[in-house]
Image (cartoon, rainbow, N blue to C red; front, top):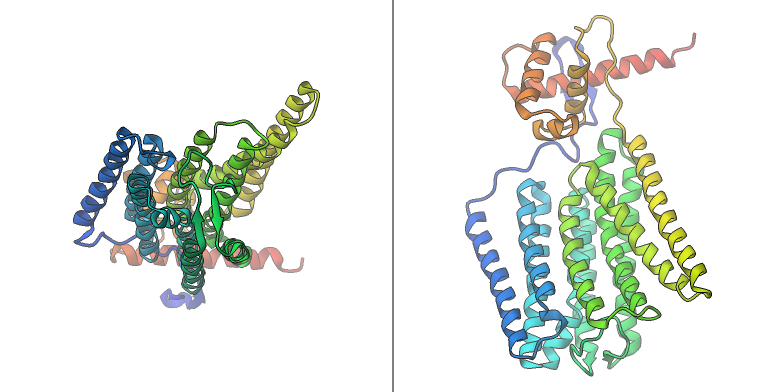
Length: 424
């Protein structure tokens, strides 16, 4: 993207290739569609309670599981209001995937049908895949999103086709090998590995893109990378819950309900995690630290004497927490956008106006700047009016003045860097 400043000339600007504007207004059908989704979510929760009342329920219809999936679907759909337009299809598909997961479990428990049970056993795959697709679309990688969607669809259909539940929903964890048999075991394992490999490749691709991106794009891309990691993270969380059952001694039903809740919470975190902010990144790091701590801690619990097992568990949990904090700190320093410096010949701005202008140059919206600097949006608008006046940008349309102000900032930032790099 280039910008012209009259006598200043033209220069390349890295601003806005990924987050050039806030999400556009919602379409005219969003209201009715949201009402339909809420009705389907509420209906699924009520149906789950009804199945439980008949005595045919199991962990897919447990009230906690049903409420988690229903609430998660609504929360993910609501996230479309603040997401870039390109991510909305993926977010809506993820919300529908959570509802489908809920209703499949209700149907399979209600009629004890092995076909529905087999479909439910593969229902985690589209949810996991769509979590990663949301991150890919937010990162501006539509081809990778389509490729992963294709892999997810193939893996889901294949797994459902070869699954042969021997005791559907018998209160055991979904990851327990004695619950699910397969007509073609090697194919089922291969499909799971294919999906896991695709999600891991997607995560690596976004990380590589973030590492090569301009500093103004890094925070958004790192948030997208954190979102794509949640697909693999959900698999790790599933393994952690399985470890709590064996060699741990967590009640099987509780572990299974915990996994369903983890699916819903992971989806919600992924829906909001690709938005440029600090809290999703820190939450994802905490998520990973918790999963690793559970995995290693359960294994440490087998050590004898018990006092040594407790000490090892505490040490592992502490190390995971410290690692998450250190990683978050280093990422924050790497993601820090350089602030504008006062340059001779440019009208002097106040320190706060400098901060606001730097955020504008980084592609921030008024709402985003207000959240980052702990200001109200009205205060941000007042600072912008002052900045436009001091930069002598006239009375042009506000969006044009915003772009021109950002362009001036980048020009003088580059000029300062050339002066600093010049030989003494």
